[in-house]
Image (cartoon, rainbow, N blue to C red; front, side):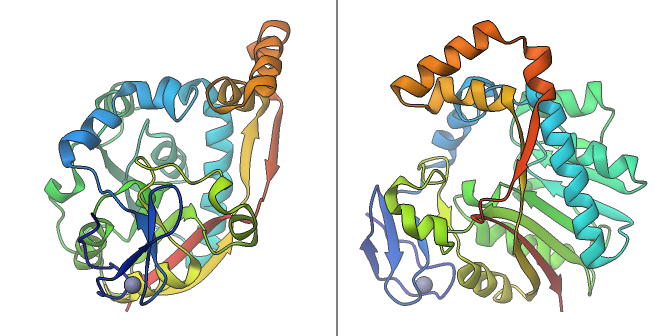
Length: 285
Ligand SMILES: [Zn+2]
């Protein structure tokens, strides 16, 4: 059952792709066949999601996330120029907002996860709200930029978020996002084995063409799309393999966890661009 109209082109003709994904017969946009209810999604994003389900140990791997965010801030300000303010949708544990605030940017954010928002507010002193972005009160023009890092693919209705962002931005304001690129060479080559394919947490599977089209329909004009490198730590890889790895990889990870102290593996960081995560920079016309 896939009754929703395509968010990229408005057509309503879907064909099965693989692993419970469907493709728009008109424009090629790909999404999960089943879009979960709000209640089912709230269950999905409990604290367990950030510790043990999708992220092995998000805060335990904070140095790697902070390194990613520092690089990303340097990159987006190189593209957009200096930013005075930004609002993050899906701010998780506040690490991006912390990095942006350190750079002198006025920041706020929202997330549905109570634990992440509590950490953001109580440990980091950030202006973070718990709830749905649909319910957030935003004064028009109050924020020069909106960010969604690895978030848009999780949303049952990203078009509603984009409409709200576009309405709130001043002319010339920015929208920045990262998400998987299902049109990338790696995603094409790996097909249904591509690591980014996991409904029901990942619901939307953008390519450069489809995200450009969706954003344009909200008056957000893509200024630049590029693949982005991700910093990982040995710690994050070892923890992640215990959850997602296959038998031998999981056994090796378990051994590594016993033999190597976390203090060491957290410091062993490397940065790789696999070409299949895109950074999207769009500007309100
Ligand atoms: Zn379409």
